[in-house]
Image 1 (cartoon, rainbow, N blue to C red):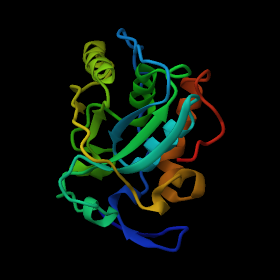
Image 2: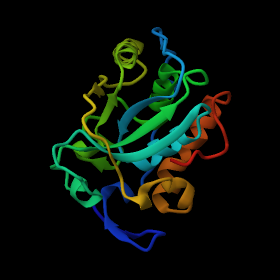
Image 3: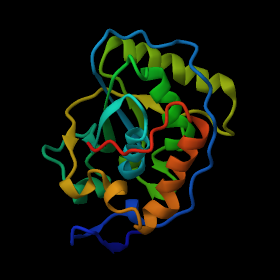
Amino acid sequence: MKRIFSLAVGLAVLASCQIPAQAEGVVLAPAATRVAAETPGLKTAIFSGGCFWGIEAVFSHLNGVTSAVSGYRGGTLANPTYERVSDGDTGHAESVRVTYDPARIRYDQLLRAFFSVGADPTELNYQGPDHGTQYRSALVPLSPEQRTVAAAYLARLSASHLWRGPIVTRIEASGRFYPAEAYHQDFMQTNPAHPYIVRWDAPKVTALRRLFPAQYKAAFTRG
């Protein structure tokens, strides 16, 4: 399934993350019953949901998000690279580290946006065309409050029966987060005409604007 694409930065890489595909179906996830109660000040959480380009783009268009950085987490290999993680045997997942202001957007609201337009919680070790454990969906809370809210929200998703299959997204320990290579950062903003972006990730941002007009912002927050 892997093909070589020429990147705007002049690099050629092998990655199933770059195969053009049809956009995922959009499901408006339910509002949380357990609302996050976080202390003032910027907070950070990590989300894994398939190819990090689209997940980064979704969070980068939310009011209250001050940074979204693509990277790798969950594996044992030190200093992972895109090529090695793409082999699917390092245990890492493509992920996005999100910094946000809970006075403007709560953690449970980030969860709702993530599952509405970012990741399908019923796809085990894949998202759309991207297959392998590196594309698993996972929540990586970085505080006890986030963990409590995340667990309650996954239970809420299961009880909602909005998806045909069972909810397979799991809560995972953080471990070390490794920022991805520079050419992956702000990828949708830098490469809006890339075939994968056009057919797979741009529709996610369009859906975000439609479903969450009060939280959507047109400006892209660079990582």
